Image (cartoon, rainbow, N blue to C red; front, side, top):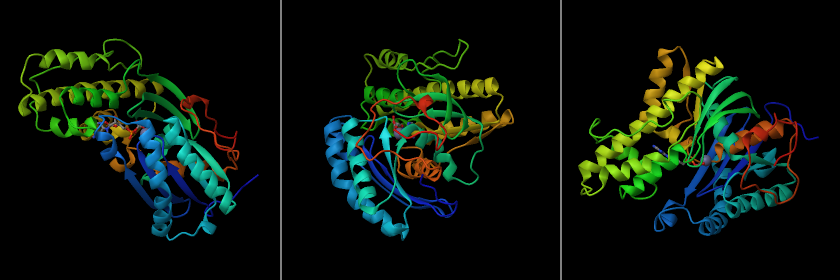
Length: 351
Ligand code: KG4
Ligand code: ZN
């Protein structure tokens, strides 16, 4: 089995699950050495969403030059690497395959072990790149474009799902309501920007599932509520800003209330926030204040590591490779992959 002593492993990570091509090098002694990202957002804007085939083709164009650039920025030669990590799922199959193929080819050529990483584990571990890093066990609020989950994280690879969304994810709610308001793609960050100019109180949208016990979410009703609120009205900049403000408030309120409920249910005093919506300033401010009031502490990745990146993939891969775990030399990716299926590092192969 492949083992490297602590302080001796450096991993190249590749992320290509959706519309960001990203590469990073993480070293277990020196931390993050370099990371590079190419966002395909301009490519997909024309279509108002990610076109899977175009995403895959663009990853093929972008990834290898990014690898060269990142290794140079890290001052690292391939011979200094201990392994290659790539996102093996969940995600768009074609896009995932481009990263998997490149990772396998590089690992084969360089004589290195390779590991397929769960994209959401990457998100969950991203706060560990910061100082101070959160300790386990903790409660994790994972809020991305495809997922809204509260997770009891007892250790790396030990994730128990406490609650998730029944329909749209929080990021999806941001994106879809932004589309209704005619905001440019990608809608989430645009809506958040606009919300800061809005007047709170002009609109109030439902806080779904808050009236019921439990840790489940539901955001699909927001679209209808927004549609009804703006029906027959001219979408002036002021109206859009007021609606954006109310949408953000409804989503943030719901996420805060459920996260606090999760802390109460687990008895944990540490909350970790991960995923693209974790970059939202209002969410960060409100969660931090609410948790502090209850004697809990919230940990976030830096905003650029809330959204998709390769630093989190390299880090998750490092933990697993260091424990002797490796993936077979085969092209295997998974469009769907339940995070609760993961085991602690070293326990089994992945994916
Ligand atoms: O984690 P991520 O980059 O990709 C997935 O794995 O899904 O999350 C992307 C999601 C999108 O829905 C995007 O609109 C949302 O995160 N997002 C935001 C912000 N930045 C990204 N939502 C609200 N406020 C933001 N500042
Ligand atoms: Zn993601």
